[in-house]
Image (tube, rainbow, N blue to C red; front, side, top):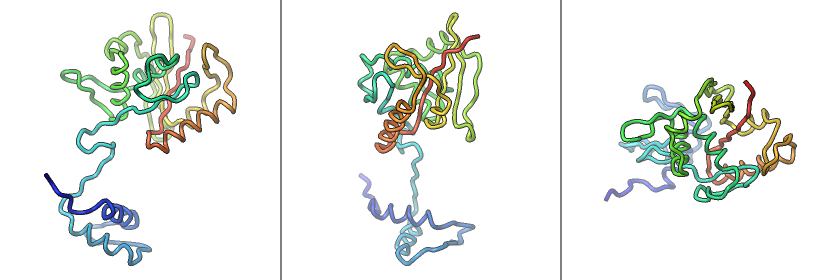
Length: 219
């Protein structure tokens, strides 16, 4: 058993201290730092091991899907997939618009966000290898920091579909139609607001801000 050297409150003070400081060759340069940060500076200086976390889990380097949303089904938890009318379309898009690779013994290799999406699809009964074989990727636009979206065009038989994932607000800006129930119609401001509210609720619950879009296309 390893006893923590510092408390969560100590860690919070160090984090706040770091947001106000820059370090250059062991010289501490601070602007606008008041006396309340002195203790935090001492704590940081006496630390011999600093652990950082960028994906949400220090030990496994994994993320997990916790909540989903479709206009037809509304928001639902990850274990409520069964019986949702449009959940299959969403999960298929999450898996196909994805660069995850399969390693030895089926290990998922790639960006933690993308591997989480594929892992969820597998939990829902999708075979990732078969899905990618059935829906051949014939074109793609990789994610970049400017566009903030990733797009793939996949073909299955005579059906060609574009799958897009990325920043919800930028994705919504590109949406012209919406599928609700069995109806595909033009998207309206009320639809957009409903989706934004659900996305905010997810963000407030520490869910990743992420969206997926499916577009049927003609060759």
